[in-house]
Length: 356
Image 1: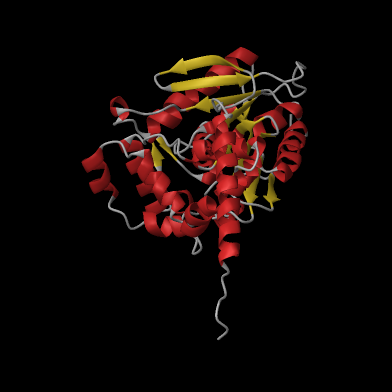
Image 2: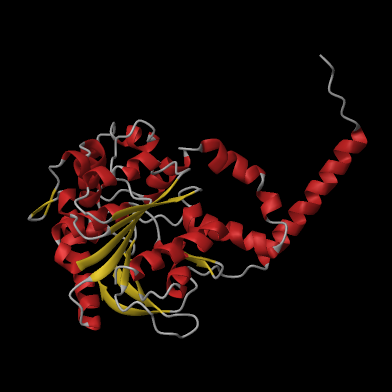
C-alpha cells in the first residue's frame, strides 16, 4: 500500500482556502436580510381559525384565460410556500403564466386548541368551505383542484365525496398505494404505535416529522449537505437559494393529534385508499367515485412518494379521462428546479385548458 503523503505547505494552503471560503460565506449570509415566505403578490380571500385562503395576482396583470379557477391543496406536514419559493422557482407563477386563476390554502400552525381536529374537519369542513367561497366568487358550480403530496390524498377524498364541486383534478407527488415495497417511510410508519404517540403528546411536533424525513437519506440530506455548505455560500445568489431551502425544511408545523392518528391508521397502516374502508365524516371514500378528468403528476426519483405509490391511482380511479405526467427528478425538485418550471406548470395549464 502506497503511504499517503501530506506536505505541510499543502495543508497550510487548504486551511487558508477554507478560511477564505468561510469568511466569504459568512459575509454573504450577513447580507441576505429577511428571507421571504412566498414571493408572488396575493390577497386574503377567506380565513377561519388558523386557515387562510389566498388568491394570487398575475405578475403581468393580465386576467386568466381559463375561467375555471384552480385551488391548490397542500399537505399539512410542510409549509405551502414551497410552491412559490422564488421568482424563478415558483410553481404558482408558472400556473399564472399558463393562464390559470390560482388559489391556495395555507393550513397555518396548529396549536393545542386544534388537538382534536379530525380529517372530517379538514376535508368536509375547512376544504369544503374554501371550495364554496371560490365557487360563489366565480358564480360556478365546479372548480379545478390541484392536490400536492398529502394534500393530493385529501383532494382525492374530497373529489370522491364532493365530486359535484370538482370539474378537473390534478394530483402531484400524491401517495395512493401506501404499502409499495420501495416506500421506506411507509415501512417505518406502519410499525409505530400511533395511539401511544398521540395519547402521550397530543399534537405531534413538527420536529419529529422533520427528523423522520431527513433520516430517510441521512448522508445526503444531513452530512453531505453541510460538508458542501461553503460551496453553496460562495455568492449571495447561491447563499439565498441554500437558506430559503433550509428555512422551508425546518419550518415544520405541528400536526393536530386526532387528524394525524386517523391519517396514519387509515392511509399508512390500513392502506385504505386501495383496500377501501376509509370513512371521513359521513362519507365512505372510494376512488371509483372520482369520475372527473384526472391528471396524475409524479417524480421518477421521488424517495418520499415512490412512482409506484402514485401510479397506483390508474388502477383504482373511476375516471374515463385519466392521464399521467412523469417528471425526471425528485420530490422537491418538482417544485423548484428550472426543468420543472419549464415543464410542469405549462403542461398542467394546457391539460386544464383542453377540459375547460
